[in-house]
Image (cartoon, rainbow, N blue to C red; front, side, top):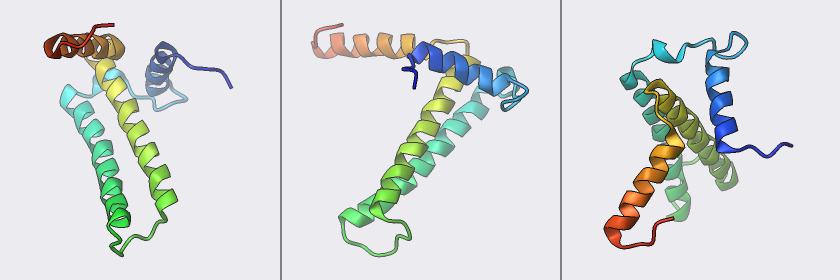
Length: 116
């Protein structure tokens, strides 16, 4: 399996979104709000799974899934969140990684932590 860089993933994510044999969805056909709702929908699904994992932690009955299934489901929902977040950044013509690194550096300077 090829080791992906973030740049490779991000370009393929956009390509799959817009490709006729992918989702066939022009990145500009949704508003920023539409993309943000998609991100938050996936994050909400992840939060629901975290709630179920809290039940496991607190020994509260009611889950239909095993803890192992829930942990796998959480990973998948968080990955979906990241995929949509990357597409949101494409839709506003911004580089997700550049924005993350810039914000990381600003926060590091603010708290007196060495910048990278």
